[in-house]
Amino acid sequence: MSIGLIALLDDVAGLAKVAAASLDDVAAHAAKAGAKAAGVVIDDAAVTPRYVVGFAAERELPIVWRIAMGSIKNKLIFLLPAALLLSYFAPWVITPLLMLGGAYLCYEGTEKVYEALFPHAAHGHEAQIGAAPEDPAAFENAKVAGAIKTDFILSAEIMAITLAAIPAEDSLAMKAVVLAAVAIGITVAVYGAVALIVKADDAGVALAKSSTGAGRALGRGLVFGMPYFLKALAVVGTAAMIWVGGGIIVHGLEEYGFDTLGHGIHDAAVAVADALVVAHGFVEWMVAAALSGVVGLLVGAAIIPLTEHVIAPIWHAVRGKKASAAAH
Image (cartoon, rainbow, N blue to C red; front, side, top):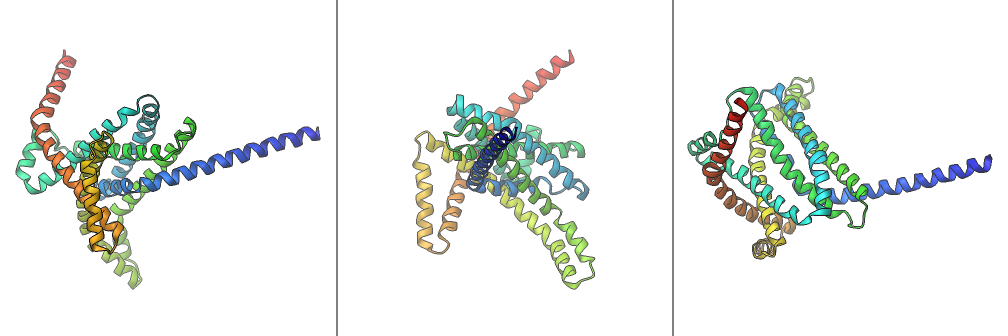
């Protein structure tokens, strides 16, 4: 009896060691993948607050929560199984799908630039594609839906980077667990940061009413500075959509052997960084992002008239036929 118990305990200890080793592997792979995806994660955190700006204070956190839940659904329900299945059965599909997503980001970001430079024409474009509901609830729903669509593209890039960082010899189960760990961790980090950002002015008001001089000064600083910070973040978020989208397209072209553009951007970034000497890595990244942004702007500028004159009319015609069929 005692020998059987000792053997059982030995087996349990062995299983515990295997489980601990597996958890270590998951943590190591997730940390590595998270580091590689850091750039896209930062872009995601910069993009999201612009979807919350302009709403009443009591709606800010519910909107962030809705977008966060949509992000989790994007990653765990749609992208995780799709990434595993496509990587196994049709890896050749991943690059063109990412490029289509990149083109969508270019379009979304360039549309914001278009609206800032040519507001009258941009409003006409939105009216043509039916993108500006006036009802407050419908407007909020449209904003949330737009944020979740954008998150889907950025999440797809994150999941693709994560999958590429996992050793090919790892089991399907290990890959699934690592993808899920990265998906949950990144979503919590991004939308936790977004919630803190959008509610910082409320925290400032509370601090400004505190009894300590330092607290009041910090609170007034937050109340005064957050509107400007949010405006700046909206600009950065728009730029992030454009340079990430442009970067995805450039990288996709490289995958198909069209690497002249990618090499040109890299060589120009290195040349500028070498010339300035100071902050070499940061300067190289900035120049590469700026040039990828130029590509993104050109792609987005081409898609705007295509959307208005081709895609939107076809979409409205299809919806009209569906509505007519439903009515009969």
